[in-house]
Each structure stands twice: as structure tokens, then as C-alpha cells.
Image (cartoon, rainbow, N blue to C red; front, side, top):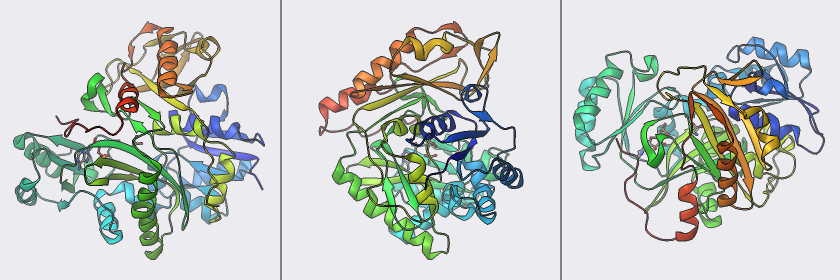
Length: 445
Ligand code: AMP
Ligand code: GLY
């Protein structure tokens, strides 16, 4: 049975992509989004509810008679929205509050990884500046660079990778004694630096079984050449040739399967999307982080590559009935480039004009616009948040998708927005050079 009415929770580019792909399922379900945004509301009915309020979400799902609810962001999961929906008898694709701790606490994730024997960076926990100083000393055998992480949710900004010991100490002090990252910064994880190239692999899990989606790469740094601060994601591409079928099997067997076993053993079977952030280094894949959800912006490039029924797969996962081999992959590639506020990831100025965004899909074939933070004013799209929208292009390979995405962006005018110019550029090169030695250290402040 396929859900004919689906509710997607969230308001970003990822949720737009999820709704878009669900609506393309063969049985053409009706898709609602809550709270959504003005861009998403052009295509789907949006409902103004607070996404972290479990009661409000349950009430809406009941009113709509939603047969499947898909929860996008981490905050509602950590707030127990999936638990509340499940308790009300509603089929929900999204991690329980306990499972979402794999993302909401980096130290919890480390403990699960240890128990599961998952390869990851060695790490120490600190709750005081004195402990942090001792941990930095202990980690001297790996560092510099030093890697310090706020334990709790910090919108992708809670990690410092630095070669400056003084900067590491200052960060520790600001978190542990100041107010940086609030409660989420009251505990720090100080860990071994992992060298290599990053990859994102998302597993759709039903508590016991899982299927892996095509691997993707996010571009987290603000500027071209991986310069500048970490952001929520400036763009992404998929698939990733670095993740060969053999490596993918290894990721499934050595990382996803043992984590599912440990979570089930803890009485918290993992049902939902498990995002595995990996460093592909000389010692094989090691886990940098888990997220308890679909990645943003990886989802914008992974979902266009999926065949068959997405709602069917998510529903089966939610019900504990996933069929191995359920996920079929289409040939080709996808690239997504973020259009952001000109000052992003600093405080957004807002109000930038993205002239021509409304006509982009018609003007350039193979292009889809996913709205993340836009506002319609006098028929024109304006920047309303840090990340405004994603221009996603499909193509026969990454190079074709990339040139299509940038050709579309070249049609845009206005002011107050910017893009990175090198999204997926390394992929073209990597496709040619695959197998050669990788640079040892990248993305260090
Ligand atoms: P996280 O929020 O844990 O994904 O960290 C954000 C980013 O910091 C990652 O995407 C990496 O680029 C970098 N990072 C985190 N942990 C490490 C590590 N142990 N070694 C090297 N880079 C890391
Ligand atoms: N793209 C990284 C994340 O979703 O957190």
C-alpha cells in the first residue's frame, strides 16, 4: 500500500527536495509541508505549525489524515516529534528522540561507535577548562591540527579545526565558561584529526535492515577552494566515484550494521535516515559524525538519482519492513549550488534580489530550484535567510550537471546574493585522476 497523503516536516531546501521527489512517485501522492516556506508554497500546501512542537505536529497530521509523515530537520527529532507521531499511531519516517542522540550529542555518538567497533577518531570528553587543557595535551600525539567539537546541536558551526593551540584553548574557554553554543557547548569532545576526503553516505534504516543511497559530497566551507568558515552547505554533488561498490559494502558492514545492532540492543531500534559523515583516508573510511536525518544539501542531489517509489521505501522503513534492494538508482548525476545571502555565513543582510529565479526552470532544461529561505516581493524572489535557494541540475555525469547548474546561475541577476563557483569542480578532476594519491590535509583554519 502506498501513502496517498504525505506530510513533510521542515522548511529548508532539503524539505523542498523531499516533497518534490515524493510528488514524483508513480502513484502521485498529495504532499503537504509544515511549516515550509514561500518558495515551497508555490508547489505544495504549507501549514504554519511549530515543527518542534510534538502536539501541534500530531494534530496537523491527524487533521490531514496523513498516511506518512517524513521529518526533515534534527530539531524536531531531538524534540521527540517522531515519538509523538508513532505514539498516535501515525506512520512516521524519522528517528526517535533516543536515536536522534547520535546527532544531538557527539559524545553519545562516540560511545555508540566504541560499542559497535566503528572506525572513528580517538576522542576525549571535557566539561571543564582544566580537563580541556589535559585533553589537548593528550591529543598532542595526533595534533596539530586540533579538533574541538561542542557536544550538542550547533547548526553545523560547533566544530573548530585549528593549527593554533591558543585558538583551541580560547574556543574551549568560550564554550565551557562562556556562552558559546549555550548548553550544547557545556561539554566538548576533543578528538584526533582525520586526514582525507569527506563523503556523505545516507542509510535508510528500518531498525534492523538498511539500504544505502548514492554517496554525495557536501561543500561546507564558505568560499572557493574550501576557504573560510564552515557553513550549512554551499553545494553538493552525487554520485561520488570515490565511494566504489566495494567501499560501499565496507561502510554498510563495518559502520551501519553494527550501529543498528547496538541501537537495537539499547532498546532504541533505529528507524529513519542515518547520515554517515566519513573521512576517506589511508586507513580506510572513518566516521566524522552521524546525523539522524537526511543531509542538507546532500538530499537535493541524492533524491533525483533514486528510481522506484521513495514514499514506498520510507513507509517500509518506518514499518520495519524494508526490502533489501528496494532502492533503485538512476544513471546520471546531480549538482546543487546554494544561492546565499552575500554575507553568509555571517549575519544575513537579507533583502537581496535574485532576479530571474522565477523563470529559471523554464529557461534551462534539467534544472530545478529548491527554496530554502526566499521571500516573494512584487513578483520577484528576495533573499530571506542565510541560504536562500539551491539550483539543482541533472546530467549524464557530474561535469554535465555542473555546467548546466552554472549556466542556469549565469542567467540570474540582481544583488545581495552570491554562490561558490567551484561546486563539484574537484569531482571532474577526481573522475579523471581516480586512484591517485590524495592531499593529506585540507580544510584547516
Ligand atoms: P562535524 O559537525 O562533526 O561534521 O564537523 C564539521 C566538519 O569539521 C567536518 O565536516 C569536517 O570537515 C571537520 N572535522 C570534524 N571532525 C574532524 C576530524 N576528526 N578530523 C578532521 N576534520 C574534522
Ligand atoms: N550536510 C551536512 C549536514 O546535513 O549536516
